[in-house]
Amino acid sequence: MSGVTLALVGAGLRGRSYARHALSAGTGRVVAVAEPDPYRRETTATEFGIAPEHVYADWSDLAAAGRLADAVIIATQDRLHTGPAVRLADLGYHILLEKPMATSEREASEIADAARRNGIMLAVCHVLRYTPYTRTLKRLLGDGRIGRLVSVQHLEPVGWWHHAHSFVRGNWRREDTSAPMLLTKSCHDIDWLVHLFGETPAKISSFGNLTHFRAEERPPGAADRCVGCSIEPDCPYSAKRLYLGCLGDPGREFWPLSAVTEKHTEADVLEALRTGPYGRCVYACDNTVVDHQVVNMEFPGGATCSFTMSAFTPMEHRRTRLLGTHGYIDGDGHTLRLVDFRTGGEESIDGRTGSGPSAADGHGGGDEALTDAFLAAVSTGDPTLLSSDAAASLATHRVVWAAERARTTNTVVHLDSLGAM
Ligand SMILES: NC(=O)c1ccc[n+]([C@@H]2O[C@H](COP(=O)([O-])OP(=O)(O)OC[C@H]3O[C@@H](n4cnc5c(N)ncnc54)[C@H](O)[C@@H]3O)[C@@H](O)[C@H]2O)c1
Image 1 (spheres, rainbow, N blue to C red):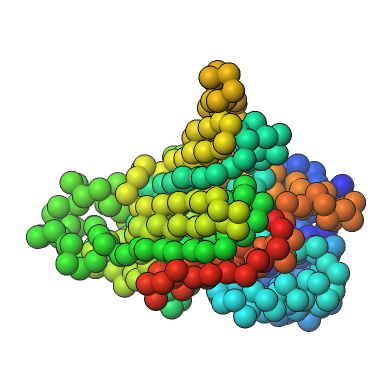
Image 2 (cartoon, rainbow, N blue to C red):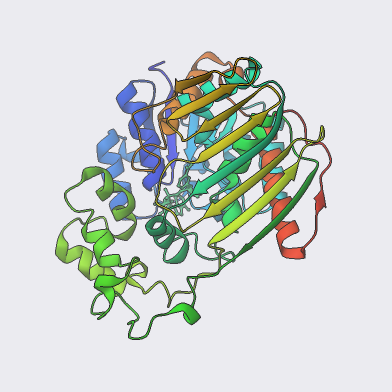
């Protein structure tokens, strides 16, 4: 396993997380990096001991050097996945690709085609598939513990401050520079639900709006920035409270604070809030993505699923109720409460990882388990160690695009079968 060599394209928050885990687990080592930000590039090169001749400012320079490693982690921003993924697949790299695969169906198809044509393994970072909790739930369903799955109710509690950070002030706030919220955030949930059902839906509808984080909702007296705002102390979305509160906590200093500033002193944070995007009033930003959305799905056999994403929650694990012909499961991301209709008995099954739901916590153990599975697949040449390949990820992304089509056209969209999941 120690022989897996990695190139890192995009040494941002996600890329460094996967690379650090590979290194600390002893399962992979980073031998090349491409990163335009000089601070991130140099600190990454030093942290991983990368030879200077394999440190690049752009993914295309790394690609021009030919194949330098067994595999590549591509963790650039959403709109910069397709170029490196196709080119590096053509060079024969196995690929760990951040979600969403791409921001359009055409580009995601190009990536899946490149993976197939080159016979490489490509895993999209659908980390939820890899948590011990999901594996336990999948096993309970596979063992028929609740009979036939008839209906699922699923909540994605994004969290009020997380929504403000990423989807009002941050990188995923606009559809035209990133993508719709259902793709940038809830593609995980749609992928996960399809994974649980084992097939893609036949019909889909969706509603959702940007209700709160808009100019009309701005309270009287609010300033354009939190620093100097007279009502900031009482505002739930205070950037000062959120980001100054990260100081001293290494996990929260890495995420979310490193998105705001890589310098973690009170003076540097306040300066970033005075001048940068993360200090803006949430009612005076240029955000366009929804702050709540629902999706309804019907599967070919008649089973149904309702999904809700909302900003207006604490940030915690997803909650899911699974309703079967012979039993019921209620899951909170830690524990699965199973009621067996044959006996009336109840069982509490521990799916816990000890790890929280956020990026700083490794997404409930999913980040580490995904990295381990990918490196094991590369080192053994066994793609069955991965929960999904490029074609399966393309299929679940297509469900997301169908849901967005349904939302924006006020219609029920019918999907052809997109294959087994
Ligand atoms: N799987 C998950 O749960 C999860 C969670 C959060 C984010 N993401 C996804 O991960 C990706 C990265 O997110 P992030 O938060 O790490 O973002 P980030 O902005 O911290 O990192 C992206 C990095 O790519 C670099 N970059 C830009 N142009 C480049 C180029 N030409 N060549 C090489 N590198 C380049 C940037 O300088 C930056 O450091 C996004 O697609 C995001 O949607 C996934």
